[in-house]
Amino acid sequence: MSKSKEIISNTFIQVFGRATLALMSVVTLKLLTHYLNVEGYGNYGSIYEYLALFSIFADYGLFTIGVREMSEKDDKEHIQKVYSNLLTLRLILVLISMGFAILIAYLIPQYRNTPIPMGVVLASIFVMLTLMQGGVSTILQYNLKMFWVTIANILGKILTLGVIATTIYFIYPQNPEKGFNILIIAGAIGAFLTFLITFFSALKYAKVRLGFDFQYWKHLMKRAAPYGIAIALSTIYFKFNITMLRVMKGETDAGLYLVPMRILEVLNVVPLYFMNSILPTMTKMIKKGQNEFDRVMQYCFDFLSMFGIPMLIGGYLLAYPLISIVSSPKFLTNLKTGFLGSDIAFQYLLIAMIFAYFTGWLTFTLVALEKQIKLLWINLASVIFNIVLNLIVIPAYGFRGATLASILTEALVMILAFVMILKIKPFKISFRNFWKIVFAGILMGAIVYFGENIFAKFGNIGIMALIVFAGGVYGVMLYLLKVLRKETFRLPASENTGIEIRTENV
Image (cartoon, rainbow, N blue to C red; front, side):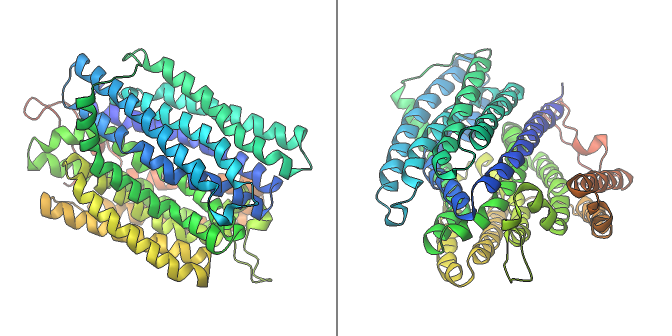
């Protein structure tokens, strides 16, 4: 299989898996938002968002840097060394970060007399297992063999969903307060199954064992530090909104913001999975010359535009019915009462999402260029900007202010990263395919806009049918406009460069 097919296949396997997980997440979200009130779901979501702030320190960028380290030397002994020591560092960082998370949760005044501190203790098990599973899967990502990781994630999610449904319908059907902690434990049960499947899948490609090369630890930590801190800062400005909302405005605003965030977390994996898949190739191509660098940048820009534009247009137009599908009426806007719901937050956050797509591409490029320290300063500036802006807008506008802060912060990161790359290694991008994609997206949007009332008569199934139909029209338009062609996403081997990317109109 050619390198391009491996990259696209690996990306689509993960995106397919994520789509499957998304469907189960919709069911889970639907169950939780019906079982818990807005305040209860706000507490439930706040637990995981709080832990996410600490898990970033355990991640430390080791997954991405580990894949990059492995790709530098095609030698089994070298790969095993990287893998084993990476796992040890991940384990140490996981234990330290979760320990601090639990301690601090009990010290925050606003969390007292709430289910959050105990929920943090229980949910930390889920986070630890998930982070270690991510470390184990590094060898599978390097080999572009993420199929079993996808299967593991799906089976783990099925088990989690089963425990949640059992709790809601059979154990504590009328008592959400008593069932709350079991809902948290459900995540840990599913994560344990996911970890086991990933562990045994990785054994085919390397020995899953700990490494204790202290000198190499220093090397990995030093190399990962700029990117790890940059990722930490990036996650802070992406996740900290929830914590600030919970503290400054209470559970209701946090709950309304969390529902669309759950959808965005699914949509945002496209650039993450794609860039993780292409990172080893991008690293090699940068060394081949300017022409190859231009081609890989065009390749990434076209691919992410092709996914991001229709999600922005379609999601914005269908915000109300989509939020209705994944939650309950108490989360929706009611114009008669003046209540603004999660659908409004979703529309705003979609704008932040399209910026995040291109931000992901540009930040991974900085990693491939070994300019992680630049990324660190970019994200530090963005975190300061985000926190200050949230302190101003959240008290006045609640969750709407938090969404505005997200939009402006993502735009700032994108602009700063773009300017930084141009200074380090200028590149050329053709917008010919981009404008074709926008045209196809607008046509798709027109179908959604005029077809919504007709398809909505058939309920949720009708809305899903409209999405499929409009998406099909979008795909056909891309083909007719010659955006979707074999040449568009071909990376065949080449005697001259080792790797070649062909993108139309580069």
